[in-house]
Length: 503
Image (cartoon, rainbow, N blue to C red; front, side, top):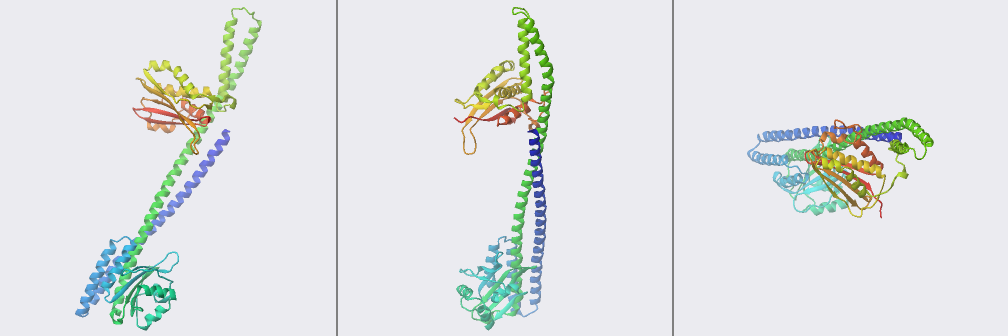
C-alpha cells in the first residue's frame, strides 16, 4: 500500500510538472505576442506622426496657390488638424467612425452622404459601419465587387464622375443596389470620392463620399485630402484594435501566470505530501521493527512465568505477583500489536463510536493537568450526535494529544473549549461531525504551520515531533480531515471532521 501511494504521488508530481512546463511555454508565447503588438503600436504612432507631417506638407504646397485656394486649403488643414487631435484621444472604434462621417462634409463641401465600410474579420466582406445622417442600413460588399469593392484593393484614392459612377454601381447585384438606394438620395449620385483604409499590408475598409446632382463639387485636388483622412482613420482604428488585443493578451497573460503559480503551488504540495508519506512510512517501518524485536523476548518471558505458575501451589504467596506480571505482560503484548498494526487498523477494531462520550472521557483524563495549569474547560456538545465508525482508543489518543498540547500552550492558565457539531448530508457532502478543540494560548507562529503535521518536526525542547503527525494519520485513516487555525497571542483551534452513520 505504501509503494502504491508513493507511485501515485510520483504520477501527480510528473503531471503537475508537465502542465507547469506547458503553461510556461504558453506564457512565453503570450509575452512574444504582446511584444509584437507593442511594436505595431509604435509603428501606428509613427504613421500618425507621418500623417501630420503630410498634412503640413500639403498645407505648404497649397499655400503657393491662389488666395481662394489658400483660404480653402487653410480651412481644410484646420479641420484635418482638429480631426487628428480628436482621433488621438478617441479610443473606441465606433466613436472614431462617427467622428469621420461627421467631419467629412466639413472637409469636402458638396458631400451629401459619407459612408464608412470596414472589413468583417469572418467573411472578409466590406460591411457598412457608419454613415452621415440618421439612416444606416446593412450593406455587404465583397472585395473587388463594384466601385466600392474595388476601392478596398486600390492603392490610392479615386475620383469617379458621370457615367462611370453609374457603371460602377450597377456592377453590384440587385440586393446591394436596393440597399444603397435606401441610404443614398438622390440616386444615383453624380460623383464619388473614394479612399482605401490601409495600414502596412492590411486593408481595413473604405471611405466613400457621395455628391448629389452636381458633378463639379468634387475636384482632383481633393484626392490627397481624402487619402490623408482615410490614413488617419486607418491608423486610429488599427491602434485601438491593437490596444484591445494587447489588453486581451495581458489578461490572458495574467491568467496564465495565475495558473502557473497554482501549478507551482500544487507541485510544492505534492512534493511535501510525498516527503511526509516517506516519513510516515519510516515511522511505520520503525514501529513494525520494534514490535518484532520486542515480541521474541516478551514471548519467552510470558512462557517462563507460565511454567513457574504451573509449579506453584494455589495458595502460594507469590501467586498474586505472578498474576500482576502476567497481566502487565499481556498489556505490553497488546501495545506491541497496536504498534505493528497502527498504520493498518483492522476493520474488526472499528465499531460504532460515540464521539461525545470519548471527548468527555478524555477531558476527565487531563483533569490533573487542567487544575495544575489553572485551565477552565467549557464543553459544548451536540445533542443526539450520530455515531461514527471508528477505533475508540485511537480517537482517544488524538483527543488526548490535542488537549495536552493545549495545556502546554497555556502555561499561565486560560480557557479550553471542546465542542461538537453535526452537519447532515447536503448534495455531494456526506453527513459528518466537526470536533473543535480551542485554547486561548500563545498560538503558533506562521512559519511552523506548513510543517505542523510532519513527523519528527517539533518546537518543544523535549518533544518527539510524532504527536500531531500520528494524530493526522489516524484521522486520515478514519476518512476524516484535521485542520488548524491560529493567531499569535490569541489561541489555536484544531478542527476534526469525521463521517457519521446516517440514521
